[in-house]
Length: 411
Length: 141
Image (cartoon, helix red, strand yellow):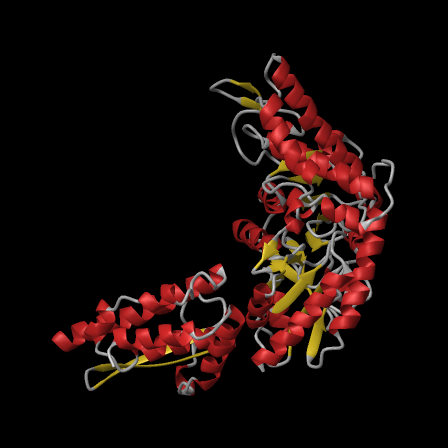
């Protein structure tokens, strides 16, 4: 993690940096509790996009002119910031992608050349659809089979079952660092170590983790780690794939095009070195640069300060919501981030979400792209309130009052 | 009453409420009072696609009129379904096919629904009209 000077944690000052938090929705000041879907953006991130297009917009990596050099420098500086942020050993182990889903697909596509019939892939029971579907497609292409690591009622993985599933046919394990639907923090270090004993590679989906706790891919010994900028105060349409150099060299390129080639003749093309091998075409330059600014911003507050404050919000929110009769929280382990997934007895989550929206409170309702979890609990979905470091306990009070009002109206 | 008259009635009814919370309360009440659908029709075959909460819709032709019954697992959706049934059930296939659904915009239903619910509403109207088209051709034949 970048050791930038820390500012003291002051939520009032922080909120002023997010222009969207000043607006009203349906006549009420906005309460934004859909942070697990996407985070809001501070002014510095928004400004960095305008600045790029206003002052140094150019195509990167190939121009001889000043603008191209400036843009290239800023884009590559962002890659270095990501490298430091996640503790990667080498800069070229960080591939810019359009986001988590794209990153996962690069790996899945690459492994379709490495897997054979009889090989096994393990995914956890609490994966996002984007971490299930690419592997199902991969299994269809290769004849490998997909096995699921089951979970307990409290939303934690059953580690004994995971161990029992591992064998020498296991080639890949895919687990999210933090469940988007439940907030569970998975024991990824242990998962990775056990997979490595059987020679299996591990991809960690870090979409929910990077903005909420510090990540060190070397300490975890992750083979692949993926995330999206838009969940970390950055823009949409940009994310990264981290891969150990040895793994990235083994995978074939994902797309053909400019930037990813070294030499092209009609007989043969040789591919560019990492990271460009996986970055065909003109990349999302403004997005990459703004992603770097978002990382600077998170570092300036400090990941530990963020985690500590969000944990306070989680504890307060859990305690207050549980005072409502008939309210059940899904995902009750202690090892979780500031996500509260809940339902009111006898009430559909959509109805609760609709009433909350009328009160200016943004939550997510539905299956959160994690239908297997909903099937596990035999529910159509949940109401999910996910807190970020710019939220406050006063906003949680409004949520609790809103849920109570919805309950009165709906039952 | 004709479809147009029923729509007028609904528009008047909704004009009476001061804010959207009251309108929602009214829709919830309508949802709760919706007659139960025959359980045999609460199967996947009768689910309307495009709704994020489940909606089951059954139609049958009785004495030249389309009779509709429906249900939903979400109460506000059920209220919306109840409004549509009030407008359409008991009307002739021809009247349904030609109906102009002014009330949806007049009471601001669409703009106050989340995009997924608004899509669901469009799907429901489309499904009802499809039934009507089918019955219309059946009657002509």
